[in-house]
Image 1 (cartoon, one colour):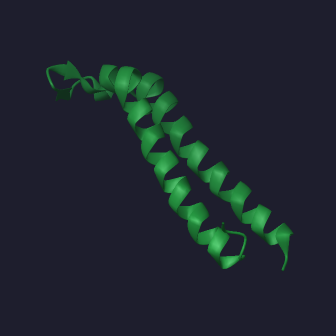
Image 2 (cartoon, one colour; image 1 turned 135 degrees about the vertical axis):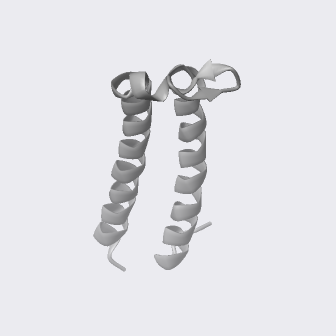
Image 3 (tube, helix red, strand yellow; image 1 turned 90 degrees about the horizontal axis):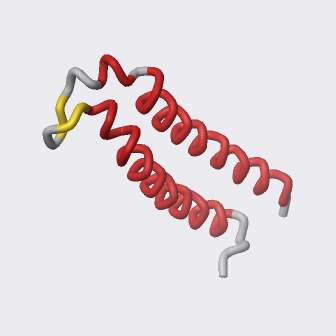
Length: 81
């Protein structure tokens, strides 16, 4: 069993998922806030919503996705509990 391959995939998952979170939180909350503010969500500008709530929701979803990916990876490398 090659644990280097396991950790390479694990770190790859973390890099991709944290990059998505950074893009959503920084991009939608700061960089693209003006164009997003032209769209309303629940009575609030979408850029404001992403800065206050959206990035947190995305992070929670990414945690769940990471959990599912790691379950599959652990089973593949036979390191599950």
